Length: 379
Image (cartoon, rainbow, N blue to C red):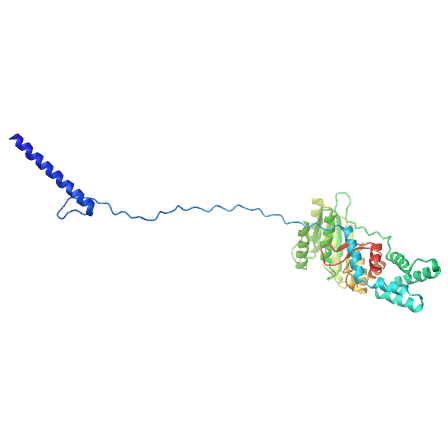
């Protein structure tokens, strides 16, 4: 009996195992249980193939680039500028050619000498200097006779004497001891004063001097910006104040900084003042007095437009009464200027022409030399 019992149990176990295997196979193939089956079976959802997600890559920060310092210009040395002075004056000024033409006549009669006088006066030399020059020319050509040099040589020598080569034309841009030289630049509107200050800064840099500019023309914002542009080109700093502020205060601060920094020269640009505005002229005197609380003013340059003729002489006289002008800067000398203004303004003030403006270029400001000037007039 036991053997039969074991046999029946074995057959039952085999049957159960067979049914379980059949159900598992069906589930794997169809994904669902056979009908009528109540066995709890958990099935996995069908696999989906989503595109792979790439990890976000943060952009590398751009390397910081330090702003490069602006390339500074190298101004031309003052000595080489005299070459251009001769070239430009020789091509634009008719004074020398006219005088040589008259003096080269076979017969120098009274009509010829009157024509020479008219030519000199028209060139803005002035009546008194003209009469002196004509008298010397007549004497030399008459007395020396056949022994006299040619007319060109005589004229050259007498013109150089008239321009006066003995005047000291050196710019006083140095102070004593540790105090910087102070250059005060004055003049009326339209003469090129601010431009002259910028060009003067280039001369100082060309001579390897350290400089500081003062924008004391506080009533004209364009003047301050213009001066700043000139300074940036050669690495010269500009001290400025608020628009409409006190010019004397700006000048004072600039000279104070110049003393503290140990610079060689401080150049002060002032407002263009009309000679008939007494209040403004008094203010210019105040600027000079305030500056001298820090350091002496070593040079006062009056900028004149060479084309203005006798009007420039009136300006020169008024300014000299206020600030003791020590030197003249003649701008636009290569244009329609007649050249004689050099003689006239020196006679008017008793001070030398020290600089001449030759054109619009940044280095078209040159030291004045009497012999080079006369040679340029005579071509």
